[in-house]
Image (cartoon, rainbow, N blue to C red; front, side, top):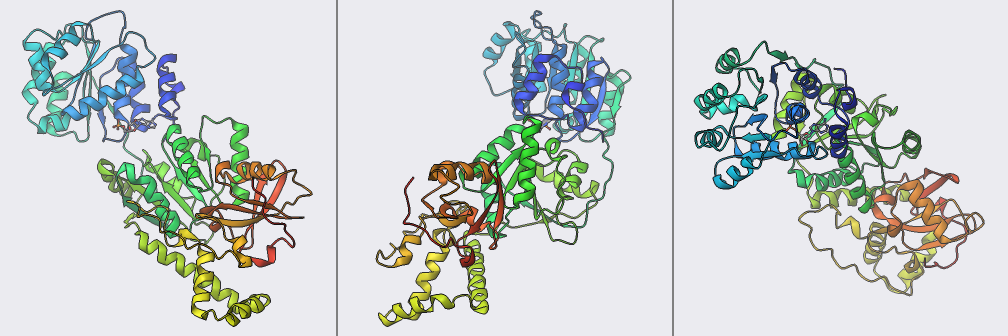
Length: 554
Ligand code: AMP
């Protein structure tokens, strides 16, 4: 399906500004189909689900048709429930925010009749309400419909199910015959067809029947989470699977900005791409993402179309796409070329139905997943830690340290205790306290490091780990320079960079544990204005700077 940007729909600058403020980048299929037809004055029948963007599909043309100077009801939207009427009114307010003098009023039962009557008298031009209360206002003379130009029936099938058929007919009989009528309904039953035949004139049926597409055969999971728990769920999945990079899709620019900020605040290296970012900057972000291989990119579909990476280990649908084709494009970027990849969709509440819709139109199976618990995340970390220990044992690269260990054993330290203490230093606090746990158990107090041991100087602060950066005193003016490079090249917020220890040709830096754990043991390249710089987790002894002075504070 061809994508339309809102500026191609012939909208006023005020509405375009509102759409941009909401962060919508492209019209959803129902919007692209309905807006031009409604603007042209034709009646429509739109088959549409919640979550398809149908509200803006009728609210935008309704706003454009409303004459601010005329203080009479010009648009009437009928909704089955008070909740829907409130939602539609809220979205209409946002879309009309830059149009002066347009008032949209929700009108439903259970709220003060007098207040609504007062507001109607003040000259609301758009009325959004439930049929019963609208009838009450009509009967008591507080709502006049003789200037109505457009009537919208939102979720017409539900209104009929709820027994509003007679009310709807009474209302439609009361509005001027030459008005425009729009029916939005998930299904078009014979009863709806009857209403359409009677009340619509030559309606255009919006055929947004989705084209079937074939999703690639990759692992696809969905997790049912409350919208407010999505962030926590995302962190858990990243943690549990030790993902180091991937693309996380959101539907609006605003959501991209919020999520990228939240990830950075958690020390998860991330960057963002959306249509509101200048092209030069987008290219820079893209190149950095491709080269680094250790960060997450939060993106909208529009911005991501320019991404020419397709062997991602993770793609996340943080918001569900409107169009199965977008879903297929998004997930098609994982696990190509024989590599394994995972596509994850986070859905909540009413959007759950859209999973079946996607399965049908993308001809695929999306399996339901269960989020890992804090305990499972901890276990997984322990397994990873032990695997690292085993590989060091197998390689024999522990030998240079055997004298140090002997010293401790001679002091009478128990070997199990010694090994456990070393693991504690290695694992850091995050190993037994997943950062994503919610409700968050209290962090356990970390045992104080023994001050006399030489390794104490190396123990990173809670939540942090040491990494080495391939730049030393000769290239860097001050520790501050290194902070700036980490902010620029890895997206680590400056406040999250801990102690810095400048060496001759390389330096040690304390960074958020999540970042350090995301690095490949052999190091990663970080792109900065000073060129590519190697960053390596400290546990890889071969990359350790040869010499370093005691840590400088910042
Ligand atoms: P609806 O189907 O009208 O209930 O809309 C579902 C959600 O999608 C609402 O939260 C809207 O704010 C959002 N939305 C609607 N149109 C767009 C769009 N073109 N781009 C991004 N988000 C949208």
